[in-house]
Image (cartoon, rainbow, N blue to C red; front, side):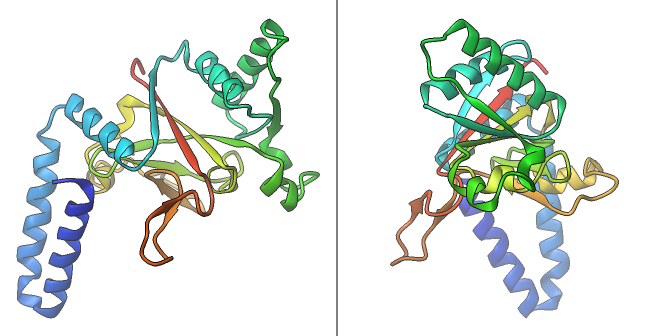
Length: 234
């Protein structure tokens, strides 16, 4: 059973419970049993499911290490012709910007990447520039959900929401150790932030829509590509 079928199964069960209140307790029991089944899996199985769900949703997964991820991403961005990168104001963003500068020095014949700091989301970077001049956005996820292949990104002053919603290329860094079974197990483990941010994003792949003639199309709005950097040694 894939993630789509699991989600539909829950929706059908929820609809049935709403029509028949006596089934509510039964549905709750099914959900608890479902969550227990996921928690009994080994973490390696969580990882495999997480990666497969992302691949099924047209995302690209790169397994790397804490020491190598920034250098590997610098090569990827250069190969893709990225000119302007928007990064959050966090340690990982600074590591990436340093790696990009070093890569440019070592490969002067290659196309250089001009980093755009996230503080420029308001000024002097205009909304038009944000939508037209920024090629990629770099974010850090705080958790991954194996059941759906979703990344949880906590937005705020250091991680503006526009980073993962506007640029055509969305890059997200995640520690493999932060992968959990499902959103339910995440809540049960109380791993959500103590002070909830304005937005918590659940990202499972590049943008897609089926509004036109019910034909699924990717990249119709928002990011056309999603790259997930998975730190397997963290």
